[in-house]
Image 1 (spheres, rainbow, N blue to C red):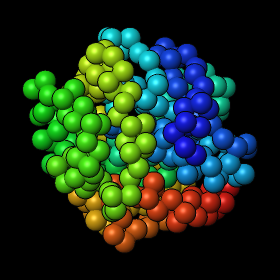
Image 2 (cartoon, one colour):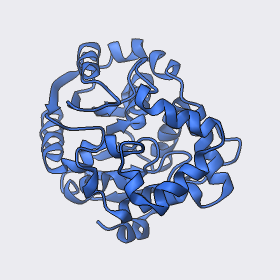
Image 3 (cartoon, rainbow, N blue to C red):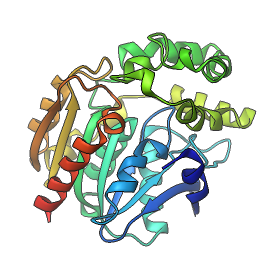
Image 4 (spheres, rainbow, N blue to C red):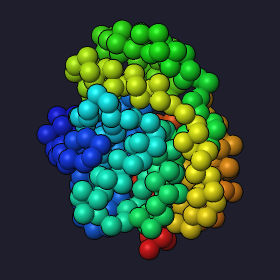
Length: 288
């Protein structure tokens, strides 16, 4: 799925949190794919394309990301985004979902599952915010840059020279092979954040709202969560150590499988999509 195809397929639904953009493919039980910071639903394009025969795959854009639009005073924390996801499935008339999360989206998926377990058919977590492991040390310089007013300049720099996006000084460490990330993908991820000054401010607010208290608070709910859970983790993630996959597997009693992707990094669901999709297929089949 090209960026042009993806953007053309976007739909919108109004919720109390904002006008939420999303793309969906396929039919059957709903699988809800939740991305993390700086990217958008395009992260899940390979899942949307390849898993439509077994699930109605839906990838929304988070608050302050992609084509989703919000009020300037709309809260954008992880807890607020989890609340938005609940509003989103309500607005679409969806009762239960198989939720899949990555990065910040994985933390939001945990919050939703812990607080509203009746709405979650199954859970799949990849390298993500967990308990008190975030914001990652490797990401703190970017947070400081944003807090000091440098966010717009950083985004402009990554778009004007996409090799900078792929470098160790930017998002390169999120990928196993950053040189294979297409310019069009970088454009799709970052350009919406510069669509207007308000969009840039929204992203800055999103970054400023990072607070592990949101995920620590739902630990009791995770310890009671019976939803069949898959934990899949890249072994070489510089942001989220492999140890956190073991923490999740121990904490969530519904965990059915914990799998490591040798050499994988934060965005392995995008890079190793065939293998990850195989894991999702098996997970959903076993859960049902």
